Image 1: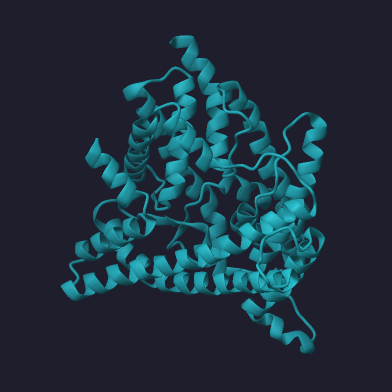
Image 2: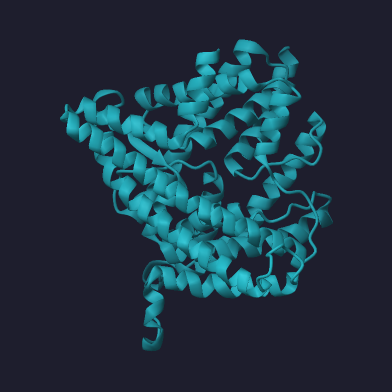
Length: 428
């Protein structure tokens, strides 16, 4: 068990190491020279680490933004945290080993399904697999499953998600990227498809469909065609307005003026986007060619399913629009859902950016600008509704005020709570 835990904690959950090893395997299977294998492996590692560094800068900036948002608008409620659920499951329920083994089982089932089904996707977002393993293990445990069956059932269901979600999203991904080389490996896909559906119904169609990427600006505003400047023009006012409402005492900033601090945090956000997109370009330049070796030898026609930031360069304006509209939707849901007896879920700015931005790409691709706007607000409401429903399910298990955000893992948990748990208990 110690070896398994070492592999999971130090390799499989470390996405940069996992992807680098897969790139190395692909290059070896293609019988590349030693120098090419070393170069391709290290460039893949470097690309992912640069991407991660950009994500970390964005996370730091958005964490600050979330704090001043809550204090500026005096919001109190439940903050979704799958990390807290994972910690409680391991420490209080003693499910650490079961979660680790379920994680490994999901990975194995992913390869089996990709090898023997039409869904040829290898899911490479390790952290998302860990959260899926946590959900299936916790809800399987309270359904009466133990030992072998707890792991196998969780692995099977999680494995289905690893191939089904990329497969369902791939038609839109092909439209966005213009190729079939990569897929989306992010467990918020149900939310993306929800936005795409709303965008299809309420968005633009045919010749009337205008992408947010093709927006025409007056000549004086040509500088906004630059991705980073356009992000800056949007984010700086957002940070300054929220900081103004929060006031100087909201967050400790030392001797610096609180508005100047907010301004620099907005710039830091743009810096994070710049670093992230640079890492994406470096990563894709290596992982796609290397992955052909896996496809040729182990899983014919395999397609790597990668984390959502990989797709941001394909539609950067839609990412920012998706972030803004999803945030609007989550704020509306925060006040509306308690009227119907559901928990108040506070907006999570990290989810709003990464999931909302990706959903914006989907909405824009399907329904143009109008689809992205209407679909984005609906997406924000949707990704708040599901965690609110999950609070009720967790309360029944003894987890007080606990919920999560990634809607695919939430959907898996609700599948257990509403369908599988009664079946398991009936036969136990």
